[in-house]
Length: 46
Image (cartoon, rainbow, N blue to C red; front, side, top):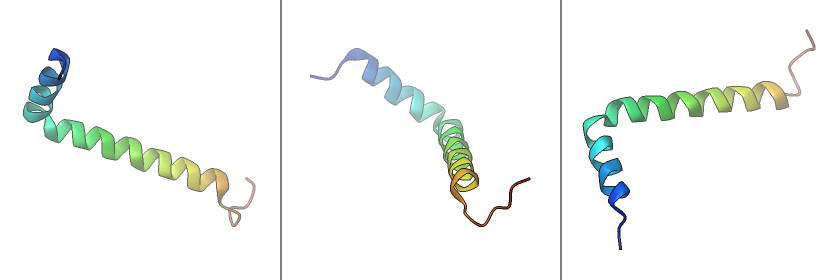
């Protein structure tokens, strides 16, 4: 069975899909940047 909230989320993603993808992309890029800054051995200490 599919909960009623799932249908609401699907319709919301349909109408605001671009904003949702943009926010996901932004969060992904920020997390990747954070990981690369934290774990990059070639980064000299400031």
